[in-house]
Length: 365
Image 1 (cartoon, rainbow, N blue to C red):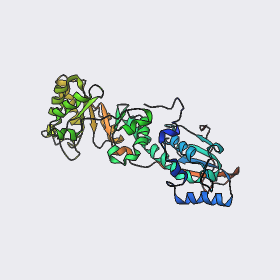
Image 2 (cartoon, helix red, strand yellow; image 1 turned 90 degrees about the horizontal axis):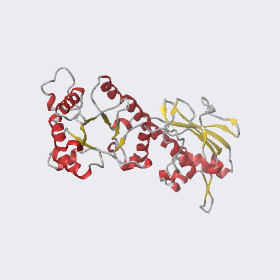
Image 3 (cartoon, one colour; image 1 turned 30 degrees about the vertical axis):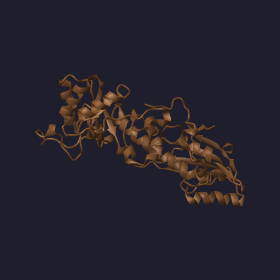
Image 4 (tube, rainbow, N blue to C red; image 1 turned 180 degrees about the vertical axis):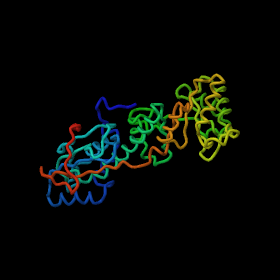
């Protein structure tokens, strides 16, 4: 599991930010851009303290990205169009990526001329909201699985541009694998995956042949894991793949549709919910593999898993070795709020808000 023990931050260049567009307010709410322009036009340069918080127990994500946005985006543009950077005129204090945070806890403060950074609130809050959401959701499934490997598989459920930061958030929160190179790029990892249904279809629905071709090409550089539900007959397919690949097979992945019943369960229906990847299906595959002399082949369960479902599987002792989790990890919200709470050293927060100093914050260079 990733930690923040080293207390380092990702360099701004990691994020490949579109600096000019951020400076010009292209991604910002128009009213924040107007605020910056009005303050500059009026020659009004209040020194403010802005504090950032959110309202749920969570993990802090996106803080390094938020700092990078301030570093490249704070400043002003001369009438001739020359950008004058303002980062060195700000005092920023913040927590670190992956820090646990409490409701209403201040996670960052920005002190300085408000006209230098008024236009950036939309951008840095959005980054923190998205990354914290991913971290919180991934940590929940990691804890539910009792530290069994979690494979982060939601890339196909969202826009491709979110992959880099989301993958980083999943990594910090404890996911052991991500599925795309983009998701792994910020820490220098690699995307992982399984023999997919589409490859099996391309080999005329022959799971064993597709698995052999895949292993011939990629083993031992990857852990060969094979989807075994293509014919909706996971037990014999798992055995056939194990016999064909031998020690090259790391695991089989159960992914039966939630609307289908695997053939191995047709004679057992009546006392449990037989659809999808259910405990009895996992038990039957595990028993078959063990009985055939393949106790080292891992079972990955996927298809509609979230923290609650994983908790039920773990409480029942279902013999799953790893979980593949997808769309549930990008659902929900973890919004942040930024308030100006001090102006020229005097309290100026709106009703219901006030300056909340946090001794955990550290100065950002």
